[in-house]
Amino acid sequence: MNNVCKVSALFLDRDGVINFDSGYIKSLDSLRLNYATIELAKICNENNVRVFVVTNQSGIARGYLTLEKLKEINEVISEHYQENGARIEKFFYCPHHPEGLLRKYKKVCDCRKPEPGLILQAAKEYSINLKKAWLIGDKERDVISGINAGIPESQCILNSSISLEELNTPLRYSNLMINAQKLIKILVS
Image (cartoon, rainbow, N blue to C red):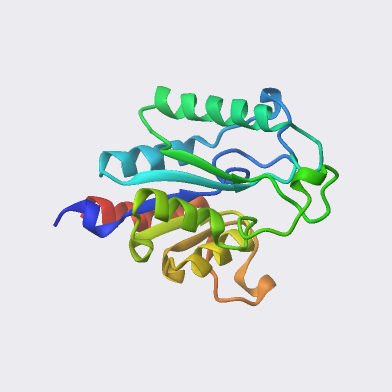
């Protein structure tokens, strides 16, 4: 069976999945990539699965960094992926926050996760079948965004050390590579 039919896309959150989350990334000095995620993206790419980033970046609305700096950081991430044989198709980001300091970005929107706007935008732009898509995030809002967009709950992975009992929810928790093994088995079968 053609792998393109099995998995249509992989959506990754940025902070906490692609890079280790140490607060707002305001400069390249604080960027620490998670190379396990690069390997996962490489395996997806080798199996004709496009990888997208969907990320809340309220630091822009809060005035911590500029849109230009965000694009620079994302470009460096993309370059690291390419240097390691992986590709990120596109970064989709939400610069808004309802309590932001910058009026231009201070608002309630449909792209700030847990709203599904970023994923729906990607699905429309790239004709992605969301029923066959996967998502990996580090916060419950990431997973809820995927489910709200139409990605099956069983294909939304929460990469967190928080236990299932602590949050009392049906969402799954574990480390990235343990959870990603299920996706990899589907890709290579």
